[in-house]
Length: 178
Length: 191
Image (cartoon, rainbow over all chains, first blue to last red; front, side, top):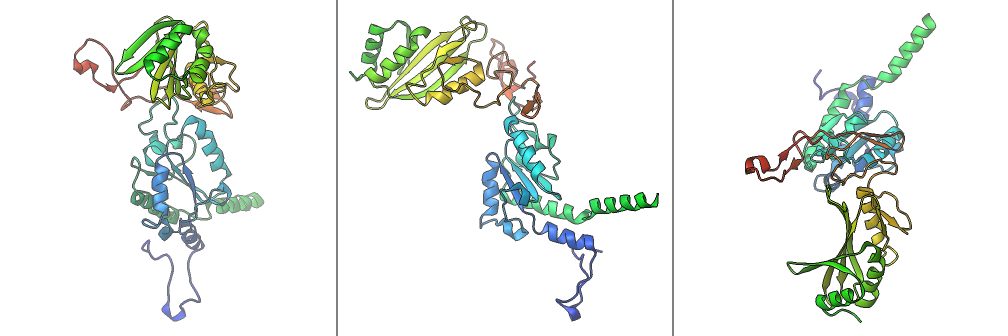
């Protein structure tokens, strides 16, 4: 089945019944309402704000609800230079975000330390938290961030939504069998 | 008696305090003064001469020389538009300078930065803690014997640091009499 048609559609019963897989339906909901945790640490945050404003309008991709509370957010956009002093605060906020969660490393600094090869800067946020999408640029244009966001949406679409639950279910099943 | 010109300010200062060296460079005046007198001199400059604004306090590490460190005070006189620079030498054995944060409040954070980066202590400072690096970081990173890439440090639950890979940057010049080919900025692994 092509990627763009995860939902079976019949015009005769329009608006009433949809047949789909549970995973596909959940992924469809997840990927189109990604609430970002804007971890704005440097100049990339300015481009992140531009991506959120009317010209580039991140709302077109369902990610306009910038949540400054980690408990309500789905994707952490690490935008900017991560210093060692800030690194553990970023990690702590990441740990406070509920599953499922994703991470976009926006720009050269968050991806690799960028030009800051120095004593004070963590050489890439992937030393601390798992990164799903790296966006290149110094800073990246808002289009680049949106492309990264779409890439993340495609990635979410491809993963089994109930992976953890399935694993637990199978574990409990095998537990009772033995 | 507010100073009307930089020369009258210098005359007033040298009449009351010991000026070790006076340097003029491109219209900027630098006075090398005694470390023990800096507090009184700072008060004199502010209250008597009218240098009400402290632009910056910074440290300098002249590694390999004695005395090793310097503290530089940049003073500004708003009414007359005068700029005066005061320098004191600090040896490594006696790394303590009287604070001027009770004279110019802005010196508070500048002195904390100098303490953080060079380890120069400021006696009488209200809260002499690190300002850029985290509390407990064992090094003073702007000292010349600290490698550009950093040193590993471990502070569980506070922070940590690892040496940064220098391949590909930053670009460092090496001062020498060699040709431009060897002198020019390039990435170098610094031990």
